[in-house]
Image (cartoon, rainbow, N blue to C red; front, top):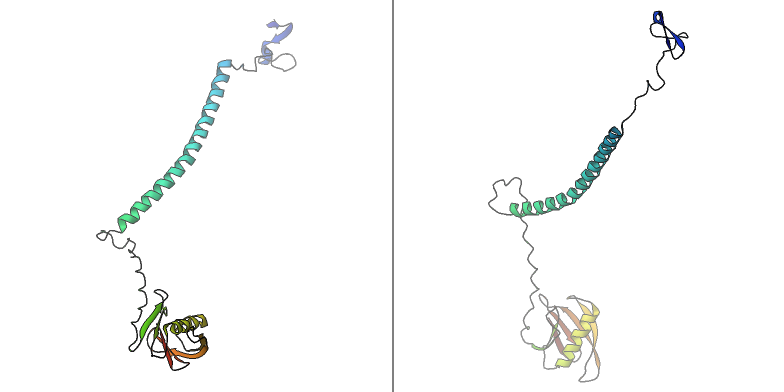
Length: 196
């Protein structure tokens, strides 16, 4: 028994194949048609996944900055909490470092015995000049101090030349330490100058 399909013979004895061994289906029977609703649903899902990815990335990087700031604030609070002396866990606390006290200013010695103060440049070392004999004028004592400071001796021995405003003459003076932060200079016409 044979049926005619589309003008061709269909042989029941060949298992659904035509004369030449080819399946006899309609031309569009092998393809599935995609419905427009399915295409729209797939596009919507892809867009939704992309939006979630972008949003997640923005939140991840945005929360990174705020978490860094909150971590910094937390660590600041943690260090402050650790500075408390009655902290329970002393092994994990950082030692509290007290600020260093300013170094005391060097003591300015008092006017040496037998001398009188003539001038002062301020509070630094060797800023004051004193006359140690009746042959020494205060203007000359100040000149000796200025020459000694200009020599750079800084408390050590030095030989200097100092001009006397009273006599108008320059004199050679020999200076040497005479105690802590005290220098005694002698020379000229029995002049004695203390720099302290």
